[in-house]
Length: 412
Image 1 (cartoon, rainbow, N blue to C red):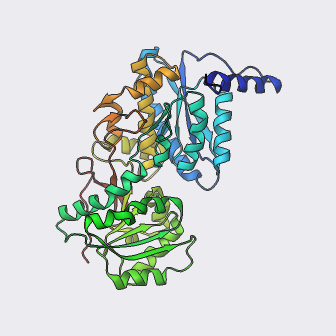
Image 2: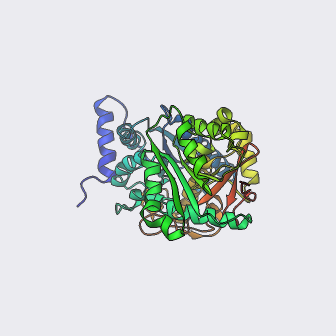
Image 3: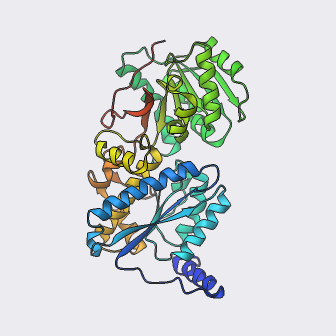
């Protein structure tokens, strides 16, 4: 028998409230609204990405509510519950516990983009049997046997395995010579280490690609001269740039430009949300970024013109990044699950999410053409997205069926 179920989590929160002299928080779900949590960092170093997650969810809630809300629940409106996950896994876990105590009637939640935070949050929501959707990449998120966690992104190992073949396909489509040599420049943090691990362990050999530069540094980077000089001397067919922050990315790209390797003269592939943030453009400049490609889990693409225009108008952002389009789609998944279940009960909503199998509706906001989940919670047919900086804006160039424009392969 499970000792840590949703009922016990809720009752624990009520007891805390009662001992503090506060009114009971275990109130019934209002028939006029359904609550969905957005659990992301809203303070600290990652607050900007958290803000973009929340903005996407807000637009989705507004669109759904304006169209009549949850029709199966008599037009109930979606009410978002922002939850600040802070700047550490411990704070994220504590935030999830407070969320369930203060709002025990939530239907489910979405977040966080940091895999370590998502792992911490979902330990709590799983015990409470509350469905949780996430953009986070870590394989471990959906490898724990959980029943209430759903991963909409391609997992990290899949992204790594697919990234180079995808780039090779784009080179072929663009009429470029095949990729035969690769340079890797990366920091030693968890994300690039995990991304490149399959490449070093036979992936490059299988593709017939020779690794000619393999530079790993500890961030922050103070001087990129020697690293970039090695890349320049090796003249690789492509560079994988595994930076995880804007200052290091700026420093390397500027040094490449200084050494005559800028303005799209060498194909560059990055990975991670910071490569698509407006802040990178503001500090680096469009000349330095021109032609840089980035592996992502999601982005706006074909068929998203109205959504993109609405997001720009509502939130005064220059484009709709991965963080925002993903949470926009997550809220639509909850909407469709509640319509299917005819209920706001978390268990029934989770069962409805597991039973989704559609090519319309919320699937429009995720590359892959289909919305369905495997028994472990991973999305079926999740596809890697490649965006490219073109004329000061990151645009989707792959998959071709989803692309907003064509990739421009650099001329070396």
